[in-house]
Image 1 (spheres, rainbow, N blue to C red):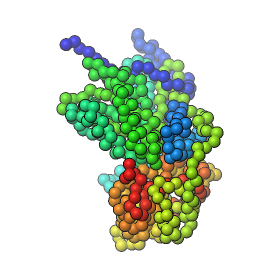
Image 2: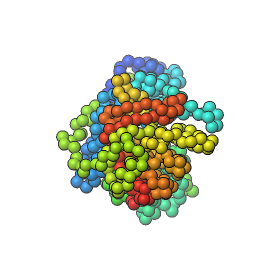
Image 3: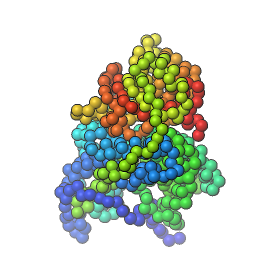
Image 4: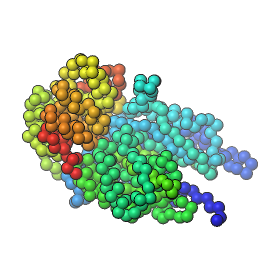
Length: 533
């Protein structure tokens, strides 16, 4: 057999629309018969800074077009349209550059391919990190990175560093980049399944996908750009392909395989998986057709004894942006600067929501909520307590030490969230919900003490939460995952820290909300919206 080398991921073309950031920081020099592209490290810093700013406040035009398609689809449910309309409104607010599209401004991730004829003379990751640092300092972004001091003691880094930076070598004299801001919700919905040859037939694959789609749930803020990768020379290679495919990086792969093992897109199975997503009826968070905008199915070579399968998503905050450095300058993917063009002249018609006054005793609020079935759309007005992972752990420590639960946890609904930095002159930074499931472990104990009787967050929850709500008379209300900017601008009137100030974005806050949108997901009778799907 003759030797054959195959580029494992042969991207056939790059149809990305780029804008030039600058012509500075690059020059060419001749070294023998080679033309060397010399890049001043300040160019790396500038590129990373601009990339992370753009991707935090703007989205791809193609992504926004898909949201508009939902509004125009007669098969979309009212809930699909409600979510799509809110996400478009959110994009129109975020593009102004003050409130990022999502409060979880993410882990900064850089994937780069550096040509052999590119010279910087520095540790590139350091200068890219410096640019990322700048963007989080000068913009209203959230510091989400927690660094370990000991095995169990952790602290917020206060800068959103470290970033994940992976740089690979390639031929030529260009430097290519994919920047991502990956929030915890969508990152947590990346799954690896170690399967075997027995999966590789029509019937088994269909059954597998129908089962595993449910693992995604809605906590990562659908509609999703979903990626399914079959095969891989290792588990790590599989999951790396999942992330890139969900970011649209592999859209221009070939559509058939060869004996050298090239990666390819399976267009037939992409349509089949999209159909399965639509038939799931999960929809854009609260029931319907649009669980996913689109699907990428990538087939990779594998070891005969192994068949890794990866599943992951890019969420409604589709924060992916490409860049490149060539002898002509430094370029960044052009994201959409006018999302308002995708908003309809008239908002979609929806039934009026039920207004809930939260400035009443908890018993009265519960008595009002019990009148309505799951899936009822609500409009919340009044006082809400904000607490998430670390605050819940702190309160559990109080209970474990025999101390009483704070009264604020008993008197008000609790909103699982952590805000981005507050712009000057505004009451709040971007302030959308976080994943409810991470707090499931606390619900039964807290409700037994009279706390967490009304919870507000995003995504589906465990059977234990349903049982606790039935036992103690509690409710879980679903908030739309994604539109953090518009919630801050239009629905949150006041924010004040009331406990654990040292925790930064994880501190307990009291907020005043107006017309805050929500749905009844789990009620006091044991009913749950997601359990019925």
